[in-house]
Length: 246
Image (cartoon, rainbow, N blue to C red):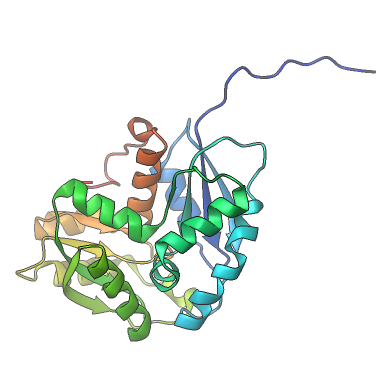
């Protein structure tokens, strides 16, 4: 029996995100940061067990393929790449080009945590940050250089010095909070950035802000914010208690 049907005349806003295979935090964070009616559609990109310059650089070769696995029938307002350290290693422009190529969408708004952090800093009038990193020195150094190139000075820095992705996501919120407060109290620091999409940061943003009296930014928070801004759906993505001053 043939059944007739009609198509829905409209659809909710759709945002795409390319998530690392090893990442356990970005998707649950985005469900909090980008609530209904916004739809978040994800693809996964292969990633190494360790966060090292060579494993991060290797992702460039599979980004287009991962982007191409996003639903072809979706109408994306914007698409993001969920890796702070790999963006710094590969370069934001190259990341964006690979994603647009995979989606065959040369004009699609694309972001990543580094680009989003720079945009958030500009929006808040911030030029000097304190950086909390989970990465080993070779990865953190590349990220600090990327921020410097973008005009954002890293005035204070601290790292957990962890290379295993599976261990990054297990870093306790209390440790993140203590690190953010310690780095954020540096005299020349105007704000704190908690780096890594796999770090569980959302519940620590406002407690750290309350303790240091400065804005706190985090990889998933700034990426969701920037994708909402680029996609024209920012008014539908404001959650008290999560976004902090941003």
